Image (cartoon, rainbow, N blue to C red; front, side):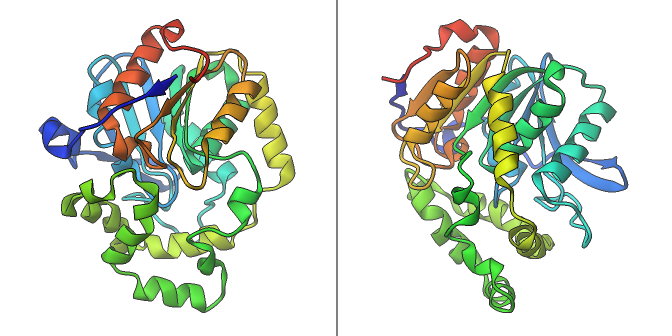
Amino acid sequence: MTVQTRGETATSLSGTATSEEGTWVSVAGFRLFLREAGSGHPIVLLHGIPTSSFLWRRVLPVVARDYRGLAPDLLGFGRSDKPAGGDYTVAGQADLLGRLLEQLGLERYALVGHDFGVLVATELLARRPEQVTHLVILNTSFRPEHWSGPSPLWLLRLPLLGELVMVLAQPWMLRLAMRPFLAEPGRLARADLDGYWEPFERSFRTTLLRLYRSAPMTAEDFRRWREALSRLAVPCLIAWGARDPLFRADEARELASLIPDARLVLFAHASHFLPEDRPQALGRLISLFLERPDAVPRQSS
């Protein structure tokens, strides 16, 4: 299924969509920032790199019409704590996320992930398959080379040069870095850029350096995650920005072939940051999928 959507703008959305309201939850001695809205069956939305729960600010109020939406900042990201000795690996993030969900009393929940957040969601799924009711996958990769090869942030792996890049980083550089991964970059308003830039003023620069210099994910990690997906026994939706220059649509189709009974929706007018490009359409699709998975076609056109 390919979705043709245009014309979603920040001004067309409810004021609550860009609300900065949230709370800090103390988990294992760390403070994690959490955006939450709505009631009903929980949907946990996980961001990727280099974003935060801010990515979901316009999706959250849409799913909150029928469900309880929860969007945490992963450790080291957004407004969450950024400890010098923090474990920012997929396994470390899944550990802390699992404890957060336990602390919130969530025994069953849907998982929605984007980019790096999909890997964290899959790690949690591999550990606790009985707790996950639905899985929604947005632009990501289960190909190891996409996480260890060249990328816009590869310079951060180099000693001294990485530190220099972070010291010199300015908001306009972030806008430039995000530009190739947005379908309509001009629609990223100054307030939106400020929201994405804010963590860089809260020690996120150090997080990025640690993250890109930590032990790389192994082939065994990816094998285990792919195996967990191949055994998935709950409904799965793959929603993909078709214009993504890094994680291309062929990866979405590959995942759809791997995951039993997966639904695949390609957004023709969206790129990597699908929640930014098409928030309302994405939110409505997630809600529909949770209500009636069979209403979403299995195959992309």
